[in-house]
Amino acid sequence: MSQNKAIDVDIDGHVAWLNLCRPERHNAMGMAFFKEVVGLFRRLDEDPTVRAVVIRAEGKHFTAGLDLMEARAMLVGKGADDREQLRKAILELQESNNAIERCRKPVIAAVHGHCIGGGVDLLSACDIRLASADALFSIRETRLAIIADLGTLQRLPHIIGQGWFRELALTGRDFAAAEALRMGFVTRVCENREALILAAGDLAKAIAGMSPLTVQGVKEVINFSRDNGVYAGLSYVAQKNAAALPSEDLMEAVTAFMEKREPVFHGK
Image (cartoon, one colour):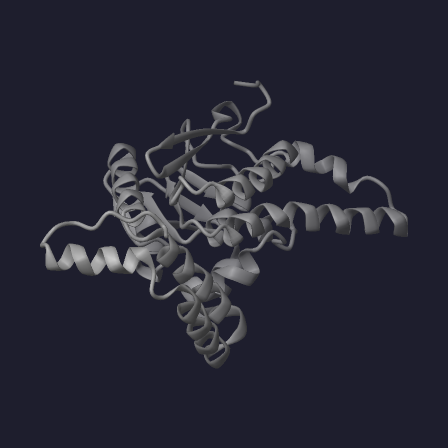
């Protein structure tokens, strides 16, 4: 594994496990990390063998967020041209979380320890979030005199609602796993890291056992409806089903039901 590599990838059956692997830096997100994420999720989106993705991390913490030592280099210069270059650089960094959200395969985050700043941006782009009991979150940018700019302010309100979101974004305060569960940011809290990984794996396998065309269609319709409204979403799902039905997977589901067995889907 390259010394500069930020993410290790392991494919187990139909599940891709992405492991943040800079534990010596508490998995701080450097420039290489953001580039890796974009390319990686584009490949996973195109890989027909992958049906679900789990993001986990090595070391004591999930991520300390943006690598501030690397990011400092982006803040040099005072001219208008420097400000324009910074704007373009921020847009490039945003593409990492956009790639996670656009990936048609459901993405599960399994969080232990601290998940700070840019980590919350990443989680907000995932479909499902699980946490161990020791997990701690923060939209830390507010406390550093930075406006969070990689997706938290745009995505998190749709996950936890405006009330909780505004409190967390405006104060930058820490919130633990139990509170994250109450507000709906995470859907499960596990006793420890080992239980967390088992729960994430079981959930990913359950999703991977469904018809991949259907699961990917559901994710696309959810995101489209969120961004375009109820009636546009209804029209979109009508078009999706008109194009997808009947499918071989649907016939397999009906046959398996009649034969009292578990269906085996092939994405056709």
